[in-house]
Length: 116
Length: 114
Image 1 (cartoon, rainbow over the protein chains, first blue to last red):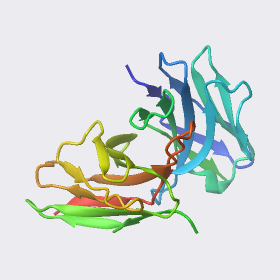
Image 2: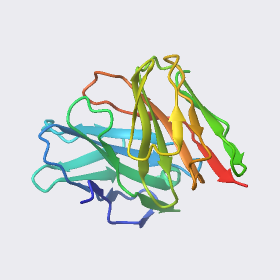
Image 3: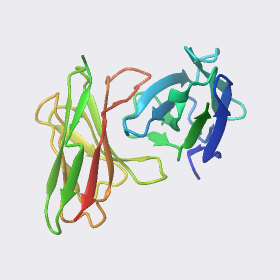
């Protein structure tokens, strides 16, 4: 089974609007971490936001927030007030367990296009 | 500025040739990683290293080799045994022992076969 599922291959959003990128995960571990990365066309993977499985509050970093619904095993990324520079691939990732170095799984990504 | 430097940005390999991708970090991170990314896909782990002089195979290690002689450096060699090496290669590092284990990435090397 896929550890990380991103069901939206591509998304369009109007500049200044909010957009939600979907991510569901599959793990039987109680301890895990969820991450979102941005990959512009240049290729570098840029860390955006992190949510630990025991964190009760949703993580926020500036215009990014992570909508964490543990029972549904979903970790959606919300980008508020979209900007043209937000156009990129977005990857959801999960680390299983604590302090694991080799249990880090990535989804297949969502390509976001922000329209002026 | 602290960060991860990968070189070269583009690399071409001839049939039967070994090529080495460089990865250097000045973040003082203990752990380093190599990932492969194919078009339209996520990242897959090739090798990782938690400390100097120690490294472990990831999910797709066949046809690749690494070394970790210095904390700052984790070069990846794509050997002639790797029959389909064309891909985008990303190096990452993280603080070992941190619960979050956030991985920070370099800008990548795009490898093509001539």
